[in-house]
Length: 266
Ligand code: SF4
Image (cartoon, rainbow, N blue to C red):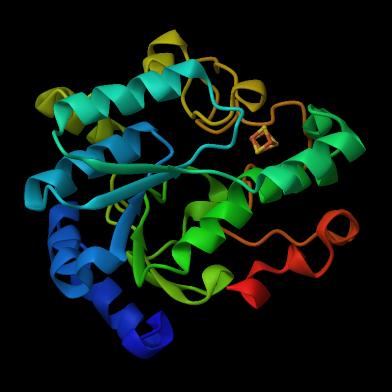
């Protein structure tokens, strides 16, 4: 059964209102009962998602967790994955990979560090290394859980707790931490002694691929350290919102032809 048949836009909106004001665990508990093994938590190993893993594991130790190993992640991210496996025995944590041929074609055509040359090249890299493998993986699921919060960035202020994700085949997208602040997340992590990414202790506030993330000054917004060399470009990679760009579409088609539309190949 597809997510479209499981829920329509109106039901998603009603559920979202129902869970507004509730603790994140309430939505997680409902989702685990509703979707079973067709539910998974997406983690980028940032503070929000380790808090979610802790909450969900307590409710159901068989909960599925996945992340995209872009091939450019810092070693500290893999160290955290190991720490989570040690803390939560039997944790079903899967690292999914981009298509090796697509990455080879991209780097042969544009270089390994193409993302520094233009916004379109950065979006192309994010698309092939993150968005496409994630989109493919989501086709196996009815619902996915993210660590998105409304206070993270301007593009996230209107997220709802329950959404239909039309960028990924209308799979159900759950954002249990939507109402939480950054401080609430860290209070939870400290109180529960949840393992967290060691780069936070080196001044990072948002963590992604090694070459595209830097530490930030205390007064900078949390996502200012992502693709910091770009001006007037979205601090998003396309996973949580579709990013239209003629240059990106053109390059994708030049590299991978019709396969540029993963929905057509689900
Ligand atoms: S964050 Fe940087 S290295 Fe990672 S996928 Fe995006 S452009 Fe490529």
